[in-house]
Amino acid sequence: MAEKFVGKWNFVESENIDAFMEQVGVGLAFRTIAANLKPVLEVTVNGNHWKLVATSTFKTIVTEFELGVEFDEETPFGPKMKVNFNFF
Image (cartoon, rainbow, N blue to C red):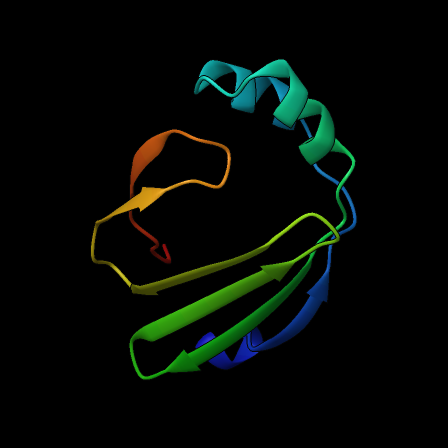
């Protein structure tokens, strides 16, 4: 199934992103910037290891993980979170 996600993806839209970012403690200035970004997401997979590279005019963010394994991530907008990517 992973091969369906591999490649480059253009951001189209999001719903309630401002409310989500506010809930996790992101300040107004960064929420305003983030709401206007249209990043390109590049996904690569090697076995169970995934790499996501989100590139925008503001910043490039790289996230690497093993599918199904929880990890700590310091988000680009400040808060630290526990993250676990899975398919159901």
